[in-house]
Amino acid sequence: MYKIIKKVDLTPIITLMEVDAPRMAHAAQPGQFLIVRAHDKGERIPLTICDFDREKGSVTIVTQVVGASSRQICHLNEGDSFTDFAGPLGQPSEFIHKSSKELSEMKFLFIAGGLGTAPVYPQVKFLHSMGAKVDVIIGAKSKDLLIFQDEMRSICDNLYICTDDGSYGKKGLVTEMLKELMDSGKKYDQAVAIGPMIMMKFVTLTAKPYNIPLIVSLNTLMVDGTGMCGACRVSVGGKTKFACVDGPEFDAYQVDFDEAMRRQMMYKNIEVEADHKCKIGLH
Image (cartoon, rainbow, N blue to C red; front, top):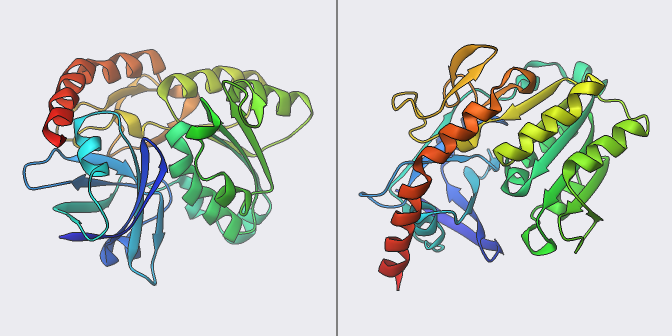
């Protein structure tokens, strides 16, 4: 059993949990994910590792209520335990294999959409510790749905915040801010986009004319997380890849986003029905 040692409601629908998991904390790297089960009959849910503390032996996850299983996870409290908390899984971010000298001479741009800010955080934190220059764009529908802006501001060189409704930061989409930065003459050695699939698609289309190397994380496609179910199949460079074992990070310009979005919609009706039953059960 894996005990929840800290729980914070970041927004009405987004919850942060710090979990006692020493072995995972020791092995985790930026870009990887884990699998949780809220109880012994619960669904296996892949979640990106948001942070880890090797000395404390804890791993941090952030969960947004989008369906039945995520609602059950967010319903747990400090002192409760997960039945399963397995990982780290997937391939870590490629930049962890570079030397500190190489990274200190590079400039990165991260584009985070919504809950995608959570997996961006450990990557920026790692790069900051290596002396890299990092700019970050965070986008959300409104101020109330922004997360990690204060934490991110302390570890990046420049933070740009966009909200759809203009309630905080610049009004507009992250793609507009990306274009504004590039048109102003900003240069980056590597960009990374993590967020909703549709956001990553349009970030890719926006970045392509500027010839910026761009990585996207397809963590939202995963179901089983081990490559056995095949639900996260995606075409990358014309070849079939599995987001959970080959990724979750891929070259954005090689990803067939339209196929990925069709696959993502396959389970939506089932999840909506399950969530309705879950909400009734929690009352």
